[in-house]
Image 1 (cartoon, rainbow, N blue to C red):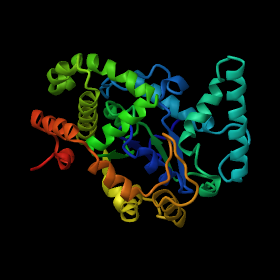
Image 2 (cartoon, one colour; image 1 turned 180 degrees about the vertical axis):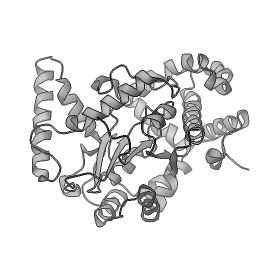
Image 3 (cartoon, helix red, strand yellow; image 1 turned 45 degrees about the vertical axis):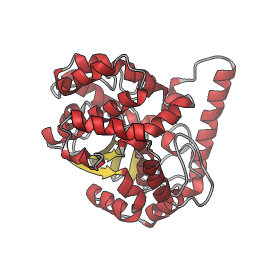
Length: 348
């Protein structure tokens, strides 16, 4: 049976917010057991769990059972053959090599990749491109379980009821910079799940009274070819719903702003670890140095990057074009946006 009072935390937000970077810094702590996006439907770790766009009320006993049973089994799925906590990271490398071999052979033979391999790769995806010398040996017993998941923004009530003691970190990024980053990855063929989900968001917004505030405006964009406008509204709906529900269901949450994290990572991460009740260790300092200064092995992928985070953050905002600024201004004019997101309002 799951321990409903065990220490647990969730990292929430939207794509290209910096959530994976935040996750990797947390995963550099020896006491954290980290799970990467386990609610992805293809992994079948939480069978029949609703899609990301469906709003869920907290009184759904069946879904509460789905979440509970999923977390009962998830730790086993994170490990494959040889590696486990307290073992040498060399065994972790062996398991990843075996998983890659299974994947390559399956695709070469035009078979489906075994579900067990897909689950393993998903739960460890955040560390896929991280050099092993940057990773840490884990304590035998974790002091905190952390899940990074972008599919729970409309399900906070259910999660709060399932894990009443859990803590939540919400990472937010400037909407113009975030949408521009998403658009670039769309053009490269990445973030396919997000792009597909945008078309279904329309029906969910119109069929749920929770989204009445947005339904009229979203309808006028339904036939629009301006994808960035749809993404800006998607950004607003996700973050406002997430923040409002965290307050409504009285969960213990902390909002982290990507810009502050990028410009002053040492101080901001110390605050995060204080919130989580964990020691801010030298391993954490080392990982932050590796990942924010652009030194060491350059890792460029949709999952991980090594770069000057302060410079990148400033440039991503300064490079926002006038059309995007206009659309952001329109967004703030059309809605009474919550205080936590008002910092991004364009001011004269």
